[in-house]
Length: 117
Length: 111
Image 1 (cartoon, rainbow over the protein chains, first blue to last red):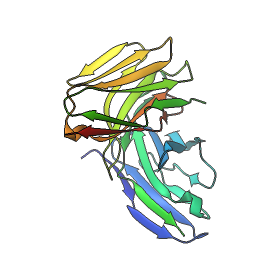
Image 2: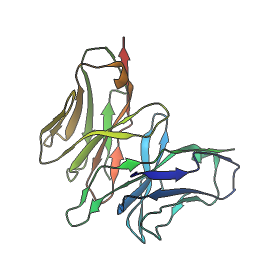
Image 3: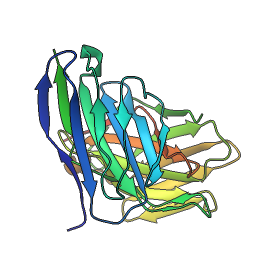
Image 4: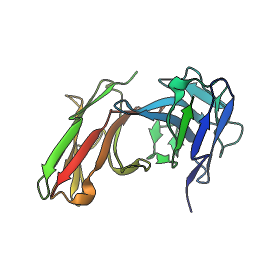
């Protein structure tokens, strides 16, 4: 089954304790992205990647890191989490054709609800 | 960067009536405009999309219109049903840097 898999689904942690949220897709998509969703603010892009070893900042990158060592995986790293990073996080992927600058529809994972105390 | 404004933030309609959600975008280079539906506790899922070379697209009870000159696009849902209750997000993209989303519209279908 074609899917984007995020883990864990729920995570409660304390301020300053490094954590990683994993994301994996089995559709051979070039493009992967992380979003955070907060009430009243919609979905805001944190980082995105157009292919292996290519990552770029989105609208709200502060406090986050990502890596794209393999095409299928795009982990989100919080080196020193703070309470303002409490949020619902979504990983997403799609095909991307750089020659025409054209994305296919985004496929979202099931989300990770993170609470930082 | 791109900025997407979405209105209204909440929309309540009677079952069977039509619902319209409107979005505007700022970057004239944007060429792809999807709409996502998110039910409570679930991930956003694509319901319809349109590209800038098309003015209107329909899929059963759902339609999207695009006005490139005015930089706005709209979602139309006809004959609304209880299962249409959800949060709807519009988005815009130039392709190279992914999607910029609106803040969402909470659609409530009154029985």
